Structure formats: structure tokens, C-alpha cells
Image 1 (tube, rainbow, N blue to C red):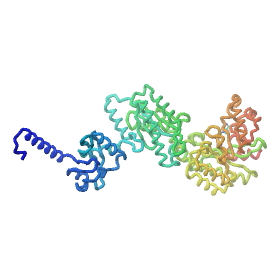
Image 2 (cartoon, helix red, strand yellow; image 1 turned 90 degrees about the vertical axis):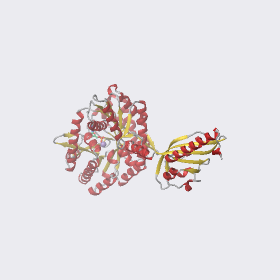
Image 3 (cartoon, rainbow, N blue to C red; image 1 turned 45 degrees about the vertical axis):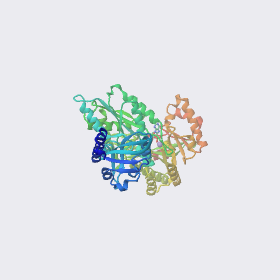
Image 4 (cartoon, rainbow, N blue to C red; image 1 turned 60 degrees about the vertical axis):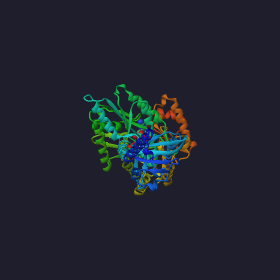
Length: 569
Ligand code: G
Ligand code: MN
């Protein structure tokens, strides 16, 4: 009836309706459309909606929108959308849906609230499929970012670096790189498990990122505990000095994970581009070299690349293969330094010390070759060798020298915390048939003081076997006197730094006096190490130390010379 009317209003209305129909047709043919009821259930869906969601319209109508929930978004995601719509506002964003067959699809989504009398009546949603784009984004995320820490990864660094260098041709962009790693990370984490290691790395990443916000640098995550810090500016400002300072300050604070404190000591290698290396690969090789150099520093483990490192690197490679060979051929030697009982003026025991003479490298000091074996991963073999040789000696001397003699062996902390340490020890006992009472292990206080049940059990197992334990270099680490009581320790060997220069340092004498008193208080054998002359001994005399060791009494001697020394006594 209406169409027959010819008044203006009718014509306009007809045109409107036609226009709306056209729009609806166009929309239907191109986008995913649905109309929802105020309670969030489907009222109407178009073919595209069915096609992409793989549900039929009869399955969708009446069902809640959350039927398509993918689990990708946080749990309050839809509640928040709902709040926006209830306020009469439009919501737009990307949503990940789950189709009927379980596959995921992404849509760029708009929800439009249809209000009547200020109340939400319907919701219209218009969507476009952006699954392909999202997949590419996600692939990029996977390819260029570290999952655990969210930091950009090495691939990203390589790309950024190359882009920067290309952009600044013909003069290369001047910049610096820092390789950040942590001392003893792998060993510590091996003992505390993967999930703790991951939490630990997240905290490390967080601290580095916090510092990066103060300074203009980018952090990239490499393998394990390695991070790359990229300083895009010229290094002439020495900005890296401030950064290193901040890093050290930040990592002085131990990391607490499940009741365990993890001390993380940074190792930092620095290299400048293009000053120190002109190609990307060379830059990274030399940075790695610089980092291994930094690791060898005793105090602050920081190093800046210099050409001499290459020479030293070659030297250490040769030294390493010579050491491995010497170990195979049994070319190392143990020397023995007597431990003197000052009350009875006799040799109470003996400390075995490894020595290495090589025809090319000459006498290599133990403080060079032991850390080398630790770094290069064969301290186990070296440690096993010294345990076995010392045990054989202990067996032989106790059978032939007509006296009881305890042979003490130094155990490197890196060796001691290996999972197979106890097995090795059992095997040595079995092979050599030594009486465990004639064997003592010298370990450092940091190893003992670690508050783990595991450590306590290990120490107890050792003493249960009959082997005694001494804490070596006492006073240089972190032990608390209170804890000494709780460990099955037999002897404290006071670090020789307390004796050095004691003539001019009254404080040292006072400390030694207290430590000697521990002898009675804790029922421990206290051994003063490093007494080199009569003067030093005289200063200590009033405190009546019972045991001592040092060049003044006897230097470490080869086995046969030690036998002669002891027979003279
Ligand atoms: O850490 P430990 O106490 O195990 O160190 C033993 C080392 O100390 C050996 O290399 C040994 O040669 C050395 N040493 C032993 N007695 C003395 C001494 O009186 N003075 C100095 N400077 N070194 C000593
Ligand atoms: Mn020692």
C-alpha cells in the first residue's frame, strides 16, 4: 500500500530502506556479523560468522558468545568488554576465538551497544578475519623474543645491528657491547632444579631491564644466563663504567627463591665497535673471549677487550691440553707439607698439595692450573687423581712409617658439589683400601655454609665413613661461628692472610687469639697456616695454638723427602 503513495516522505523512506538493505547486503557479503541479546547470547548470525566459527546458525542462536572463548585472553577479558558495553560505549580490539573444530582464529572485532531508554538491548558485532596477520605476529614474537624473559633474542640483535650498520654507511656506527653472565650459574642451578633456574633468570632479566631504563641501552637474552647489552652510543663517554657500577650494585642483593638465597656474581666482557673488531662474527668471538677473560679476574670480574687477550688465549689452550695430557700420563705430583703439633713437637698430619712441572711451561702454580681445570670442566678428573694418590700414600705411610698420620686433601668447591663426588670417594676407598681415619678432606667454608639439607647429608655421609673434615682458608668466606656447631667439622685451618704481616697489625693478632680459643669452645682442631718465620710464631705463642703449618716448619716436600723429614723428627 505504502509504495503506491507518492508523497515525499514515502519516497525518502523507501530510499532509506533500500539503502539500509544495500548496506546490509554489502556487510553480509564481506564481514562477519552477529547480533547478540543483552545477556550475551546470539540472536542472529550471518553466513560468514557460521563459516569462520564452524558452527551452524541453529547451534549458535541462543548460545552464549563465550562458546567461542579460546582461553588465549585473561579470564576477565570478556567481563571488561561487558562493562564497556553496559556503559553504552563501543568496544574494539583483536579477539582470539576457538572454532567448533578446536582451531583458533583471530578477528578484528567491534562490539556496538544498541541502547533503548539507556538500557542495553542488543549488541551488534562486526568482525574481520586477521588470523594470518596474527600468526605472522606470533611467529615474529617466537622468532625474535625470548619466551622466558620477554627480552629480544640474539636473532633480533643480529637484525638490529645489521640494520644500524647499513643505515650509517660508509662510516660504521660506533657502539659498544657488553656480555653479561654469572659466575657458577650452571653448577648452582644444576642443584636447584630447572624451575628455580627459570625464576632466577626472570629476576636477572628484570634487574638488567630496570638498569636499562636508566641508561639508554637494550638487553638481549642469549643462551642460559648470558645477556647481551647493546650500548648504541659512542663509548667515549665511558658510560659503560656507570652501567657496570649499577649492575654490581643491583646484584649485590641476593636473589631469594623458595627460601634459598642465590648469590649472583656478574661477569662482564666489553668490546667496542668498530675499534676492536670490524665484522659481526669477529666482534662476537672477541666478546666471548673477553668474557672468559673477565671470569678469570679475582676481584671485579670485568674486562675490556685488548689484543693481548688473543695471545693469552692461545697460551691457555696449549696449557689446557698439556694439563690433560699430564693427568692421563700421571705426570702430576703431590707434595706434602707437615702439620705440626706444637704441644708435643711432632708431626701430627700432612697436607697433600698438587704440583705440576711441564717441560714447556715449567713449574705451573696450582692457583693457575686448578682454576683452569674448573673452568674447562675436568676438575673431577684432577680431583679424583689427587684423592687417589693421597689415599695410596696414607695407606702406605701408615703401614710403613710406624706412626699414625692423617693425610689431608684439598677439594675444590667445584669438584665437591659434583653429583658424583661421593661415588668417587667410595671408589677411592675401595680401590686403595685406605683406612678412612687416615684421610681428611679440606673444603672451603662457603661450601659448608650453604644451608641445604643435601649439603648437610653429604658432609654427614663423609664423616660417617670415618673421614674427617677440615675447613680450609677459614676467615676469608662467609661462615658464621654459630653455624660451625651444627656441622660435623673436625678442624679449622685459619687462612694464612691472618698471619701475614702480623708484626705490624695488632688487629690480626687479636682475631687469631679469638680463633685459637675456638679450639676449646667448639672442640675443633684449629690450625694456624702460613707461619713463615720465628717472629710470627713468637707473636702467636701467648695464645698457645696447638697446631700450625708453614714454611717456617717445613715447605711442601716430595713424598720421599717428606719421609726423610719425618724420620728425623
Ligand atoms: O688453600 P691452602 O691452605 O690449601 O693453600 C695451600 C698453599 O699454601 C700451598 O700451595 C702451599 O704451598 C702454600 N703454603 C703453605 N705454607 C705456606 C707459607 O708458610 N707461606 C706461603 N706464602 N704459602 C704457604
Ligand atoms: Mn689446604
